[in-house]
Amino acid sequence: MTRKTTKRGSGKNDAIERAPEGNAIAGKVTMQDIARMAGVSKITVSRVINNSKRVREDTRLRIMKLIEQYGYIPNTQAQSLAFRRSFLIAMIYDNPSPQYIVNMQRGILDVLEETNLQLVIKPCDRSDPKFFEKMAAFMQRNTLFGAILPPSVSEDDKLVTMLNDYDCPCIRIASVNLDTSDRMVRTHDSEGAAEAARHIASLGHKRIAHIHGPLSFRSAHERLEGFRRGLEEHGLDLPSEMIREGAYTYDSGVRCAEQLLSLGTPPTAIFAGNDEMAIGIYQVARSKGYSVPEDLSIVGFDDTPIASRVWPALTTVRLPIREMGSAAALKLVAAPEEAAREISFMPELIVRSSTSRRK
Image (cartoon, rainbow, N blue to C red):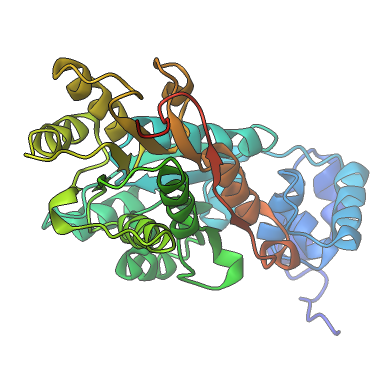
């Protein structure tokens, strides 16, 4: 490859082009100098400095040798300005479950603490008529290294298109495949719910209810359909009067449990779409004189810390939320061939003390 250079003595530009060594001696070597000498972009140099895995090993070694040779001292603020990319990763979410978000955040931070990248939390409300206007303003204020989208905001194709328009790579976490493998972390919520149904049915329950999450969440659909499928395998159905729509919150669990346990023939077992709604069921059951699990079996979903701290301890379907957050963060910082590897998480039924055989 032939590089076009200005002639000797043509002025200031000539000095910059010909003598990175002079800059280094003066302590002024820049990221641009390192990138030019290595034959790479400034973004690649920044990734090496931040220990990103999204760089080939031979390229990394070449850049590190130049950094050592010329005594380049990285300046985080200057790096950001140099190629208009900050060192922020945003977690953009509309999930109403605080514990889910805390666990997801911890998983992301497990990865980012080994880099110079920082996490910014961006809650949002997709029902807000000004949702996209507010997101555009957020993107204009914050030039992001990347974004992580937990459910259900991960299901919003229009938001993903907006992020792409701002040159912001994103990783989507969802219960179905929504994108290419390098942009996806998948969970198998339907199978987890089916396992919950099989467990309840195996205990001899016939009157079984389900409180699902908001139907604007794909996970709510997946868990409802999986639960139906698991019951059908045992010759059981899920009648409409035994189904309630919650909001993945404690209060909605209380509200729905009040309705179900006030039926003329109430259920003997309830599967909640997440642990927070399941804890709401506990509250109502106790207020109505039900004993858990003797009179009412309860199953949750997610296995958040509260599940093992209530009494009796909650039988639930475990989704490794923290690990899911770590997997998403690793995809953002990984080399392209690593990011393309398919990653999915299979739920696991955790049987504790809130379920028992129907007497």
